[in-house]
Length: 224
Image 1 (cartoon, helix red, strand yellow):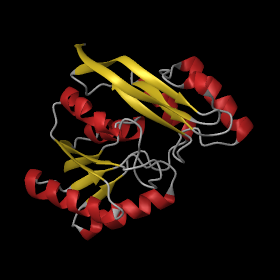
Image 2 (cartoon, one colour; image 1 turned 90 degrees about the vertical axis):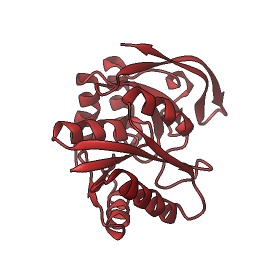
Image 3 (tube, helix red, strand yellow; image 1 turned 135 degrees about the vertical axis):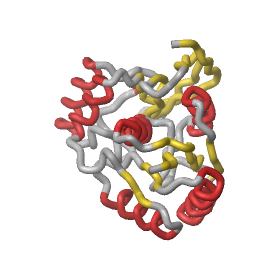
């Protein structure tokens, strides 16, 4: 099938795209909704505007819009736009464990005549995270907002040691290891489908004592 990717720039939408590609689907475009605030139930917030840089690394067209109060209605409009412009048959999302997300995206896609494909849905969360490392994904933690996660993790790229630490903390404090509940957000700097990699040259760290985020101030692209 010819597919659009509901793309946040984080690890889940990227690995879902990669899996769809490996399954033989054609990736036609990226679709991004940039939330107006961090209260969105469906879409990621930190650094979402920089999906344009990731689209450049992927060599794919990007359809994007800033969210309104009616996020589902806006998504329907963007999916219809993608279908008309790029002839997509379905949309890929990075849903893993959230039935709410899976069912909402399935319903929205159906209303505009598209199939919803969620290659990661139902996966074991630890194996999901291990798969990122095994496939050479470079994933930066860009926000944390769960008890047990602290400022030292902001701006860190997840490696084997960090994953082990996150797993231990998720068991101790009970947060979602894959961050699907918004416990943390991520930004992908490199992955197998990127033709070039992203370098974060400068960022500002915001921390209020409980939660925080990384605000990119300068990114560059380099050859792989």
